[in-house]
Image (cartoon, rainbow, N blue to C red):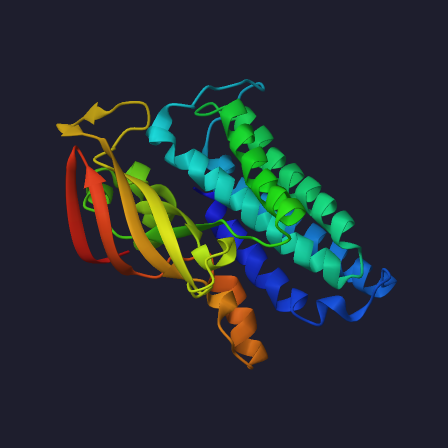
Amino acid sequence: MRFLFFLCFISIQFHSTSQIQINETTKTNPKRFLIANTAIGAVSFGSLIGLQQLWYSKESQESFHFFDDSKNWMQMDKFGHTMSSYELTKTMSNVYEWSGLSTQKSRLLSASVALGYMSAIEIMDGFSSDWGFSVSDMGANLIGSGLFLFQEKYFSKQIFQPNFSFHPTRFSEIRPEILGENPLESILKDYNGQTYWICFSPGNLGVTAWPKWLMLSFGHSIDGRLKGDSGDYMGYHSSREFLFSLDVDLTELNVRSKFLTSLFEIINCIKIPFPTLTYKKGDFNVLPVYF
């Protein structure tokens, strides 16, 4: 989940720009198009350089190779790839529409750039001794961008939205070198504390009595996983956890402030804590608040 840090940085930069009268023009604005491409190129290139220096430079390198990690971490990292690719595609589509590109061109170009960016990271993985180029990671990237494109084409709206939440766990203290040595690292590395959600409002599916801002949320997490390719490690046995909760689509709230509109766009991918029904190891449990 090391992509989330760079994803959030890019989203903040681009959303602050994309809110400026996206539909103001019907033709490509050369100045805006240049600004959009320059910003995308600079942030993408800069984040890749930063990732290389902060992450890969500390790891041993070898010739390019593939690595099958499809069963590691109970696929939690694949959820991370899917959401990262989805958010990148969505964000850059807004940027390109702001530049004056047609909706269709904005969608296709944003998906291409997002997949190119994620592929560059995967190629760097391919030269790392500890990892390798993962076909399953690339499949997850395709699913993320595809989810955005599919909904834009057939619904003209993002009805099903991936969201993310996190809570600290004791496991990062047991293996800090793998699961994070500080709170920020734990958010990125401790899959036990991460939950990935798919959220939607019945109000967007024809249920007129249901408010569009109130969403149903189905989540997936894991517990007790200390080693990526092993379910039993250091006396802990890992298990999946399935969750049901509610969420709020902040973009459906009627606010007049441009600042709040932009802020809600940025943070809308973060699941709001609500009472939650959980299912783990054959047992149901109700939590008054779940992060």
